[in-house]
Image 1 (cartoon, rainbow, N blue to C red):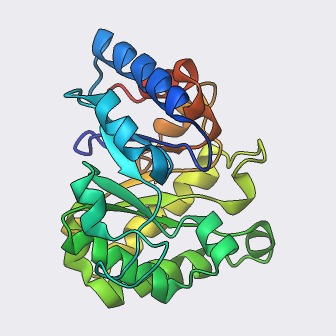
Image 2 (image 1 turned 135 degrees about the vertical axis):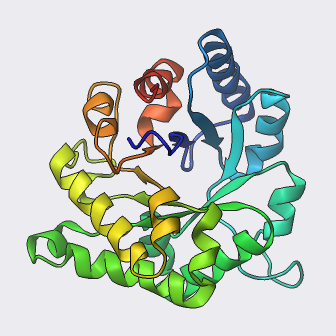
Length: 255
C-alpha cells in the first residue's frame, strides 16, 4: 500500500444476516477495533433491511456504515428501489456500485452503473465502483479491455473529478466465493492498470484514489496482497461474516 493512501477494509455481507446477527457481529467488530485501533478505515455493508439496526449498533464508533446498492433515480414512483438520499438519511456514508453479482443477476450495464455512481456522488456518498473480469475473459486475454471499458464508462458519464472522493474495487469474478484468489502479482498488475487508466485523465486523482481488492481476501492471504503498491485495502465477502476473520484482515492493513 502507498503510504499516502489510507487503507479501506469494507465488509460486504451480501444477502446474509438477521437483526440479531447484525447487532452481535457489529458489537464484536467495534469492540475489537476500539481495543486495537489501526490506521485504516473500516466499514460494514449489511443488507438494506438491517441498515438501521447496524447504524444503532455502530453508535458513535469510527466504523462506517455502507450499503450494497442504490438507484440512480430520485425518490418517487420506483417501487422496490432505494434512492441515494434515503441511504444518507439512514446514516450510510459509502455504497457499492456495479458489484459483479448485480451486473450478472440484474443485468446492470456499464451505463446503469455510471448513472448510479453519479447519483451517489451527488448525494455526498462515497461510491465504491466495482470492476472485474470473468474467467473466460481472463483466459481470452481480455481482462484489461473489459475493466478499462467499465472504468471509462463511468469517467465519461461522471467526469474524472467525481473520482476525487471515490473508491474502486477490483473484484475478479472468477475469485468471488470460489476460494480462488488472484496472486498478488495478478492483483497488483490490474490495480496498476486501473490507476494508469485514470491517470490518462488526471494523474493527481489517479495517485490519490484508493483501489481495493475484492476477490476472496482472507487473514491468511491479506498481508501479501496488502503489501502490494497499488492495493489499498479490501472489499471482503465471506470473511466479513466472522468478526475474528474480518478483524484479522483489518490488522493486516495496519501500516
